[in-house]
Amino acid sequence: MIELEKICVDFGGLRAIDHASFKIGAGRITGLIGPNGAGKTTAFNVIAGAIRPSAGRVLLDGKDITSLKPHQRAKAGLARTFQIPHEFGHLSVLENLMASASAPEGENVFNVIFRRGHYESEERQIYETARDTVHLLELDHVIDEKAGNLSGGQKKLVELGRALMRNPKIILLDEIGAGINRTLLSKLADKILMLNRERGLTFCLIEHDLDYVSKLCDHVLVMAQGTLLTEGSVDEVRNDERVIEAYFGGGKYEAQL
Amino acid sequence: MELTGLFFYAVSLLILGGIYAILCLALNVQWGMGGLFNAGIAGFYGVGAYTSAILTTPASSKHLGGFGLPVPLGLIGAAILAGLAGWAVAKICVRLKSDYLAMASIGIAEILRLVIVNESWLTNGSLGLSRIPRPLADLTTGRMGDVVFLGFVWFVVLLVYLAASRLHDSPWGRSLRAIRDNEASAAATGKDVEKFRIQTFVIGCAIMGIGGALSAHYFRFLSPTATDPLLVTFLVWVMLMAGGSGNNRGAILGALTIWTLWSVTEIFTNRLPPEWATRSSFIRMLLVGLLLQVVLQRFRSGLLPEKSPPVKFRKE
Image (tube, rainbow over all chains, first blue to last red; front, side, top):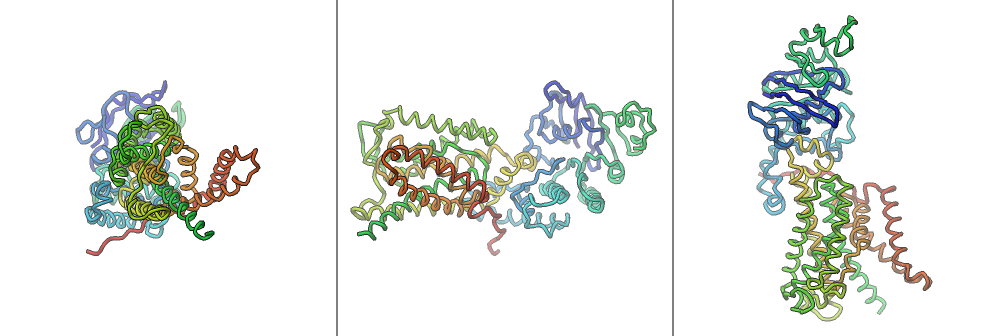
């Protein structure tokens, strides 16, 4: 479980996150919504360690991880995807996944030059997991393609595949649906639900499409102006006056979210 | 007579081509795999050259040592000291983005060169070091010594190539290439970016040190002019770009091709009218720049482009 405690983030004079506190429950699929500039991606960056908050604490399963670097948080069980795909462009799809696995023996320079036998079995394991993951995401036909040559949607899938490679406890998905066609998107939703049910994976996703959120999430956090506005089920927040106001301003309109 | 002349021309071409191949393989580890823009190759090359020279020359009152050690120990010492210099630089600079690292490394190479020129207790300053021995010098006499040295250089090239291939094909190399392609997402998948970069920089610099050491043993004489950035740093960059950044065989091929072309330009610059002759080195510098432009515009991925290593396992 992830817990944010009174997090503040400042970019120069701009306060992007202002004393935000919320929880992402273990085993759930939590949606994080809010208008543009609400601080959603910044909150993800704070959780993943890419941005150090100016105040507040981040807890993972009750442990304070505020001072850990991104790679240390990944080792602690956190995985994420990026809003704009961050693929390893010159690596094949298979390599993208394999490179994302934990490989303590194969990443040891001494082993690599002098004792290649030492990482053989670890590498075989990684290879098999990567193949299975490629298959799960139905990317088999592009497995040897360089990731840089893929379409935007396929890159998003590679991102998800990379996140799965470390067998994480929690995956943060930043607009995984943006740029993906409807068919693929609904397939992706099925996969996320399946991973949640079968592997007990916790998800938190930023998404603008509320129908998509309602399909996936059992809990929704609404951010506005750098802080948590409200939370609850999709239907609860949909009908919340403050949420409508945050999205459309003024609250005079009978908006259908 | 004509034929033996040609033969020894080819030998000297291949000796220096081999030394450049080593430098190019080193830069390929740093830039091709790691994306680290080291524009200070000459500095680490110089550290290696002077270390090996001081370790292997007979005792002299003009500079530190010499210690009269065998040449292989000189090479190992060169790799260690150049690697240490690389470690110190990496500790400070490796977090810099590529273009800033380039500026920092140019500056550091210049500092190292000035140390070599000015600390004459250590290096005999601009007068240089002489009587640097060749390895396996007892095997032959006269010009055949060059042929033996050619074999020695290419034996080292082979060792460096094998090490570089293992680095490239391994999970270590894969993670390093991932970091090169996208630092943020590599960190998000648990890669300690800084540790990888420091390792990469140190390995590359150590190999550059070996390249420098071999050149000192080849020329048997070493002075600060040997660390000319035109001939070391920039020419090596052209070679790697032409050969194929990210591909070890490309690095060797690029070194041999560009070095041959470079040597051929000497034939033309030697025939320039006398009033131009003094400017020949500047003309060649212009040629290197033009060559780099052509390569970058026309053959961006080089003669042998980077490719992913095949996944293969030994039988159970």
